[in-house]
Amino acid sequence: MRIWLIGADQAGTSALKQLRKNPEIQVVVSDAIPRPKAVEQRVIGQVDFIESVTPLNINQLVKRVRPDLILLDRGAIQRAFSRLSEGFAFAESIQNEIAAASAIPCIVL
Image (cartoon, helix red, strand yellow):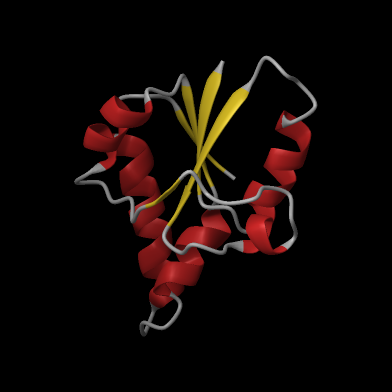
């Protein structure tokens, strides 16, 4: 199984630790920044690609990554929009739109 983890903040880092227990699962990690929490905590050496995922580009990226399942780290999306006024509400709506727009099953962590 191939899983695409979008964002490697707290929830994504925890998911990575669990997914690594099964060698048959391949995890592709993307984040908007090069050193998310999973890299800082040395759970992974680096993200596979640095990318801002939006409802507009999710399916283009799905074609490149070819996942069976998408895991979306809520904290990473919130981090990206935390500087905006009402950023958390905006981040939540973006997460829901990404999940709805995706052609692949998407679970928000």
